[in-house]
Length: 434
Figure 1 (cartoon, rainbow, N blue to C red):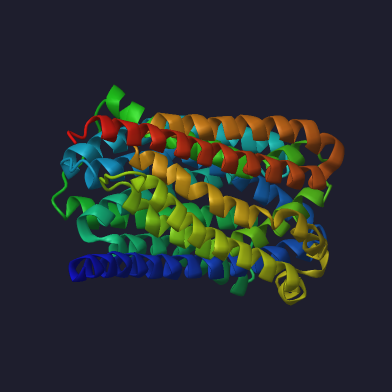
Figure 2 (cartoon, helix red, strand yellow; figure 1 turned 90 degrees about the horizontal axis):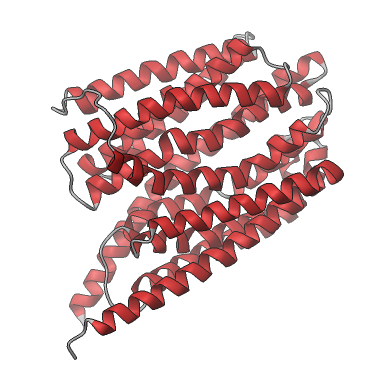
C-alpha cells in the first residue's frame, strides 16, 4: 500500500511540476497577449480606423493557425513521440522530420500568403504578409521543433524555457516599437521575422550543433510523412474549426466593416480564459504516450483529467462572464462592442476543456488514425456550419456555429474513446490465460 501511495505521489508531483512550468509559460504568453493587444489598439487606432486595421492583422493570423498545424505543429508532435515513446536516435529522427518540415514550410508559406491576401482584400501589402508568414512558419516553427528535442534530451522545464524565448521576443518587439513611437504593421512584421530568425539560429547552434546532433536535410520518407500526418491532420482540422469562423466572417464582410475585428477581439477573452486549461492539457499530454494496461486504463485517465480541465474551464467561463466590466480596461473605446459579444463565445472554454483528453486517450490506445478521422469530421461539420450561418447572421452566426461544432467534437471524441477502449478491453481479456 505504501509503495502504491509513493508511486501516486511522485506521479502527481511530476505532473504538478510540469503544470507549474506550463503555467509560467502561459502566464508570460498571457502578458504578451494583453500588452500586444493593447498596443495594437492604441497604435492602430491613432488614425481613427483602428478596428478595421486590427481586423486585417487578426485575419492574417486566423490563416496562420491552421497552416501552422500543417507545417510544424503536427511534425513536432510526431518527432516527440518518436524520441520519447519509441526511443529513436535523436540525430536520425531530427534529420527525417526537419527535412519533412522544410518541404511543408515552402508549400505552407505559399498557401498562407495567398489565403491571407484574399481575405484581407488588399488591406495589408504583400511584403508585410510575407514577413508575418515567415516569422511564424520559419522563425517560430524552427524554435518549437527544437524545443521538442530539448524536452526529450533535457526535460520539460528546459523545453519551456526555449519556448519562453519566443514570447519574450514578441513582448520586447511590441514594447520597444511602441515606446519609440515607430509602431507600424510593416515595421512590426520586419522586426518579428528578424528577431525570430536570429533566435532560431541561436537555438539550432546551442541545442543541435554544439550538443553533438549532426544535422543535414535528406529526402523525406513515406513513414515519416505518415506518422506526421496522424498528428498534423488533427492539428490542422482542429485549427480550422477554431479559426475559420473569423476567416469566413472576414471574407463576407466589407473592407471597412469593423464587426470581424470586434469579434476577433472578443475571442481574446476566450484565449485568456483557456490559458490554465491549455497549461494542464499540455502537461497531461505526455502521460497518455506512456504504455499502460488494465481494463479501462486510458478511459479512466481521460476521465480523470477531463474532470479537472472541465471544472477549471467552467469556473473560468463563469468568472469571466460576471467580471466583464473589470475586463473593460483591456479594450479601447473603439473596441467596447467586443465585450457585448463575449457572452456568445464564452461557452467555448468549457467545451474545449472537454474534448482534449479523450483525443489524448485515443493516442494512448494507438488509434492515431481514428483520432484524425474524428478531428476531420469536426472540421467538416464546422465548415458547413460556418458557410451556412455566417453569411446571413454575421458574428452571432460565427459564435453559434463555433459552439455547435465544438459540441459535436465533444460527443464524437468521447464516443470514439469509449468504443475503442471497450475494444481494447476485449482484446486484453482474450489474451488473458485466466
